[in-house]
Amino acid sequence: MGGAPAARPTAAPAPGSFGENMLANRAGLPSFGDNQPAVNAGSFAPAAPRTRESRIAEIQPRLALLAQFAERSPQAKAEYTMLAEEIKELRKPQVLTPGSVFDMPGVDRITAPEKPSAPPSMVAEYTFAKTPDGGGFRGSFQDFVKERAAAARPPAQPRPEQPAQPVIDPDNPGKIILVSREEAIRRRMTPANTVEKPMTEAQRVKYGKDKVSDKDVVTGAFAVTGELEKLTDELVGNPDKNILPAPGLNSITGYSALTNPIALPKGDARKALQKLDTFKGKIMALGRQLASQEGKLGNMAVQEWKFVSDAVLKIDPAAGNLDEQMRDVVRQAKEYALRQKTKYDETYADDSTAPPAASPGKWGKAVAE
Image (cartoon, rainbow, N blue to C red; front, side, top):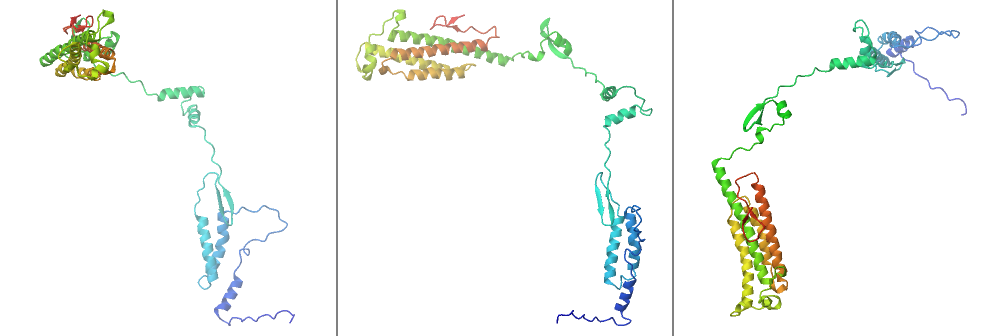
């Protein structure tokens, strides 16, 4: 029980069978070491480098021998196929980039050399330029760079001829002449396109109508402002002008304004109330007049006068400060009239035929300047 196990008997291949022939042939197949020269242990000669060519030379005898048995032996066929693929890979051309490494079994590692750093192109050109073929340049590198840059610079292009410029003749302002651009700049001549074109007859007629209409706007504003100031002085008085308030003022202001003075058959209260109504009526009348004007100031004048009109509508005699309310309206009316005069003067500043606008020298009258 404790002895060595008995060896299992193996069946020998039948005499003359394929298996008997394979065993005999396998015994005759050399290994890779069989065709290698024996190494003398005492020899210290360096081993030859293992290149792709040496590896192919090592494989080929083995491959020729395996070819005889590849059809009958699966093992021989598999080894034959493997070695044939290896030879195929070894014979492929290999392109290595500088510094890269090539590894393959059975072959020493190959490292591609680094690419030498090339000098800058400008330095290479300078080096070549100093040779006889390059022209034999004599000078420093900086001189070469300057001359090269000068040679590469495109030649200056002639300035294109400028067309003649139409300008106003300094000796005859009503005439247009043609001069060169340089002369026009040097003499500071006026370009012809800055001169306004003369108006047509229709434009001249319309311009004249607008001018008269705008003058009426300014004159009417000064006239109404003067009348408003006069009515205010007559109703609430003016200490600076020694004008006393209207006798019936107390009857239409404060608590008394809540009654109806119109219901009284006569009296100072009705006269005072009539002055206040006239004051308001002047404002409304000028508003209607402005709305009918056409000119260049008409539309804007209507919009600005509306602020004065709104202030009149807000007058409340019962508030007890009727004088302040009325004088505020007069102040706004004066400012309005002055604005319209300024606009008129600016609009017709270049027109020597424009009629003069009213002057604020005397409110209530159209005083020509």
